[in-house]
Length: 211
Image 1: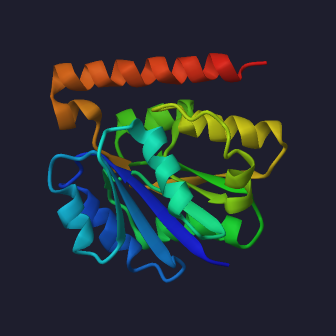
Image 2 (image 1 turned 60 degrees about the horizontal axis):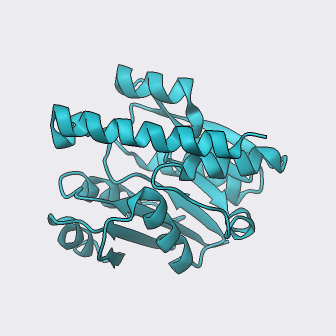
């Protein structure tokens, strides 16, 4: 069963290389797709150095739009989603996410940061459905192809669908893995503003998906 990894990225030139370096070492993965979501830095140039497929979006569509573009291009039976700003990604993290789906023990895995950084660990343990690290059976993605995917609500939409359909979900704890927070990338004010925008989008998605 083939596995494709999709990495949505917006101005992640500093971290995407480390993510791709690890992914290239995992023999379970057949294809890697980086979706540059209107990046204005060297994200595309860095990604191309690793010989992966790079999909360049002319405009910033948000994470949901970038993932949707990647899904449309992906051919794998199992789709792995990873954020481009991960710090400390190891081969065992990737395998632990993929194998339960590949071995038909789960329809989706959700990765939870563990013993990385207090702020990111706590946020994911409180709300694991927000995690961007997951592997999904392609059949699940085909079933929700018409589902509205917002800028930041894609993880919620996917989790809600799997739960409502009584599909098998497994949490995978990713030891020592973390990511760069928005305030660190964009500065305190701009990062905080973007975080509030993300939370509002998530709240709208939660309200919309409520019975």
